[in-house]
Length: 216
Ligand code: DX5
Ligand code: ZN
Image 1 (cartoon, rainbow, N blue to C red):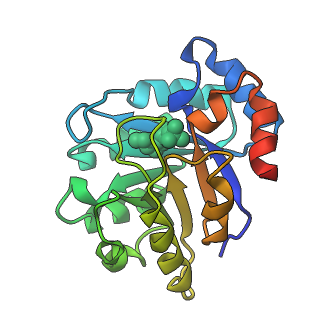
Image 2 (cartoon, rainbow, N blue to C red):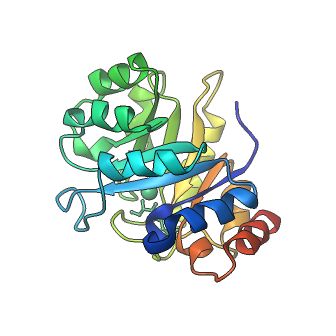
Image 3 (cartoon, protein in one colour):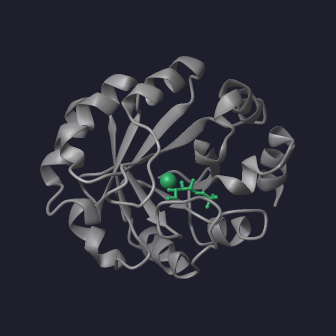
């Protein structure tokens, strides 16, 4: 069980015209994992990037790369993201009828498997998968965009997961609306990894903001 309270920068809010500098800044402040938001314009209204960019980011950093796939038919792309350098492939429970085969495949290919659920999806929906995954990503905003307000009902989901983890090894992470104001509650409720996008990259000094978030 991981209780180390990690802050994972979400590159969605980074400045892609100077991505290497943004990555370096958060690494210098202590970041050990990065969160990559893959959006297809179908599962969510926004479009971001695919394996091609993940591969480029892989060249820039040794951080753990958590690839959060907000896409339909994720089964088609698992290998491509792992080949590109993903360390965790996170699939949405809402994107596919049954993810058992996909999680088994991800792990077989040497990668960590993650499951994510939207704010409107009850936490019980992930229950059947908890022995098949390494990572649960609780969405605290409706996926698609950075800079939204934290949805507080995510805290109860995190508490439920933390209380019912038993001897299973998955980490609990939360994604969306985490910032200086909300981060203390997020960790208090049992989160291992807080994903922070705009709450980090909206600051001019990313290293300082990372440290401020850690101290908050
Ligand atoms: C939203 C993404 C998040 C996003 C969070 O769909 O999954 O990872 O980057 O951004 P903030 O921290 O700004 O809410
Ligand atoms: Zn995300």
